[in-house]
Length: 66
Image (cartoon, rainbow, N blue to C red; front, side, top):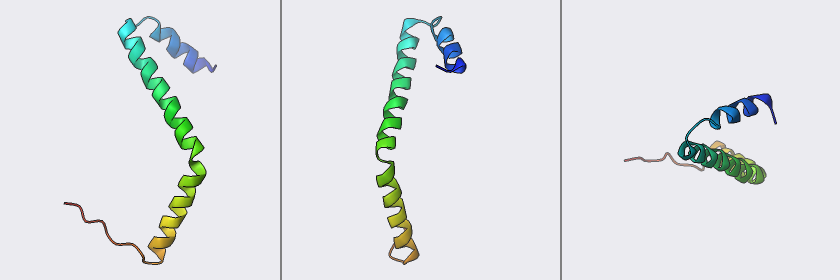
Protein backbone atom coordinates (compact mmCIF):
# COMPACT_ATOMS: atom_id res chain seq x y z
CA UNK A 1 0.00 0.00 0.00
CA UNK A 2 1.31 3.45 -0.86
CA UNK A 3 2.13 5.89 1.91
CA UNK A 4 -0.55 8.36 0.83
CA UNK A 5 -3.30 5.77 1.15
CA UNK A 6 -2.03 4.66 4.56
CA UNK A 7 -2.12 8.30 5.70
CA UNK A 8 -5.68 8.79 4.45
CA UNK A 9 -6.93 5.56 6.02
CA UNK A 10 -5.42 6.56 9.35
CA UNK A 11 -7.39 9.82 9.18
CA UNK A 12 -10.57 7.97 8.17
CA UNK A 13 -10.29 5.84 11.32
CA UNK A 14 -11.00 8.96 13.37
CA UNK A 15 -14.23 9.80 11.54
CA UNK A 16 -17.69 8.73 12.67
CA UNK A 17 -18.71 5.25 11.51
CA UNK A 18 -21.39 6.65 9.21
CA UNK A 19 -18.82 8.74 7.35
CA UNK A 20 -16.42 5.79 7.23
CA UNK A 21 -19.12 3.71 5.54
CA UNK A 22 -19.80 6.50 3.03
CA UNK A 23 -16.13 6.76 2.13
CA UNK A 24 -15.80 2.99 1.87
CA UNK A 25 -18.73 2.94 -0.56
CA UNK A 26 -17.12 5.68 -2.67
CA UNK A 27 -13.83 3.81 -2.84
CA UNK A 28 -15.51 0.52 -3.74
CA UNK A 29 -17.51 2.28 -6.46
CA UNK A 30 -14.30 3.72 -7.92
CA UNK A 31 -12.69 0.27 -7.94
CA UNK A 32 -15.77 -1.14 -9.68
CA UNK A 33 -15.68 1.60 -12.35
CA UNK A 34 -11.96 1.06 -12.93
CA UNK A 35 -12.52 -2.65 -13.44
CA UNK A 36 -15.53 -2.11 -15.69
CA UNK A 37 -13.72 0.34 -17.96
CA UNK A 38 -10.48 -1.62 -17.83
CA UNK A 39 -12.25 -4.74 -19.03
CA UNK A 40 -13.86 -2.87 -21.94
CA UNK A 41 -10.94 -0.68 -23.00
CA UNK A 42 -10.43 -2.51 -26.29
CA UNK A 43 -14.11 -2.25 -27.17
CA UNK A 44 -14.19 1.45 -26.31
CA UNK A 45 -11.13 2.12 -28.48
CA UNK A 46 -12.71 0.24 -31.38
CA UNK A 47 -15.99 2.16 -31.06
CA UNK A 48 -14.13 5.47 -30.87
CA UNK A 49 -12.11 4.65 -33.99
CA UNK A 50 -15.32 3.67 -35.79
CA UNK A 51 -17.01 6.93 -34.78
CA UNK A 52 -14.04 9.01 -35.95
CA UNK A 53 -14.02 7.12 -39.25
CA UNK A 54 -17.72 7.80 -39.78
CA UNK A 55 -17.23 11.45 -38.93
CA UNK A 56 -14.34 11.80 -41.38
CA UNK A 57 -16.39 10.02 -44.06
CA UNK A 58 -19.15 12.58 -43.40
CA UNK A 59 -21.59 9.86 -42.40
CA UNK A 60 -22.67 11.67 -39.25
CA UNK A 61 -25.27 14.37 -38.60
CA UNK A 62 -25.20 17.14 -35.99
CA UNK A 63 -27.05 16.28 -32.82
CA UNK A 64 -30.13 18.46 -32.36
CA UNK A 65 -30.65 19.28 -28.70
CA UNK A 66 -33.81 20.89 -27.45
